[in-house]
Image (cartoon, rainbow, N blue to C red; front, side):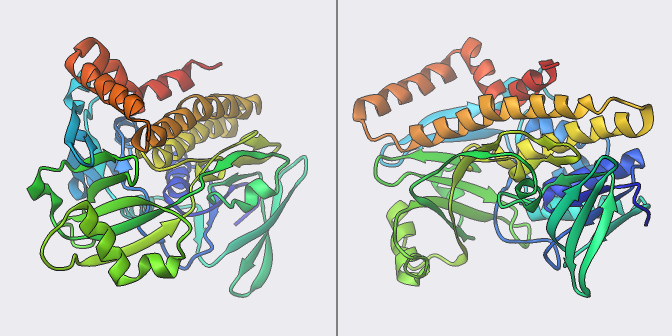
Amino acid sequence: MNADRILISGAGPVGYTMALNLARLDIPFTLFEAGDSIFEDPRAGTIHPPTLEMFEDSGVTATALEQGLLVHRYQYRDRKDGIVADFDLGVLKDDTRHPYRLMLEQHRLSHILRDKLKAFSNYEILNAHRVKSIAQDAEGVTATVETPAGDRDFRGTWMIGCDGGRSQVRKSMNVAFDGFTWPERFLVLSTKYDFGQHGYAITNYIADPEEWCALFKVPGPDGRGLWRILFPAGDTTEEELFEEASVQRRIQGFNTKEGDYPIHHRNLYEVHQRVASSYRDGRLLLAGDAAHINNPLGGMGMNFGLHDAFNLADKMGKIWFENGSHDLLDLYDRQRRTVAQEFLQRQTIENKKNIEQKDPLARQAFYDELRAIVADPARLRPYLMRVAMIEGIARSNSIT
């Protein structure tokens, strides 16, 4: 493999999306992944309409639709009083070919993307290869990578960091990662118990001043469905939070039933709201969580990273084959960083503050606002355009 290629760090859904887009453009690349295989820990699971449209030409959308669960409606609830508002995504039928969300775990999407890559050549995917440092010069980049055979240097013309919130690529750039960390962590429990029998939609946001939660259904390992419940977690240790009696007490407090819930996953993670001060430093670029991280309420983070990958790959194609100006990469930075700040951060912060609102008058005012939006078609469509991420794509494309 010669040095006339693009290096990618991180083989999650964003890294694989970048890889597939470059392969379809016939741009050679090497993709490094620190792990031995696709990471299957439960994380993102929502795919929004614009993302489905972007993946259509590659065949990813058709395969994903076969494996995932369609969400035509989602609910906003009060934990004590039940449904506050029921949002019908079918309102967007004239705005998108996919007026729904798709629930599909990010590791399943990664497997689909990797399978699609088999139709192409002129690339490498190197597992158990951890990028340690990157240096750049006027002609390209040199990545020092920890491999099973020891450290090795790889050369490329550009390097794209799709390597998550702790990105080594970002740490090699002269950029800040400004923002904050929420004081509480998020606890995710997964169970095969069917909450649908109690009237819950596939996606539900459940407000409460003491313990809000989010409930949604993904296909699960056998495709028959697995329900995930997300709770805020305080200063309790991971060992105490994961202890069986503690888990059962928490989930029974949400929905009491006879007997214990079968728990298939326990996951705990810190939650941040941060955006890199630039997505480009010379020949080093960022996409996905390496560029921006946010709380998961609304299911926007992974989608935003996938949109980064489509935007950047398109510009790389113009540079690679059409002698496009490197200024296109500054445009990528302006477009994607602007909408990360204006839409991704604002919307996800707002989602969390609304769902945990403690002031009863403010909470009631928010509920009244949601009910008014659902009742008014003139307000409902623009609201759904924003939360379905269609407005953000239009805003990104408008930046020159």
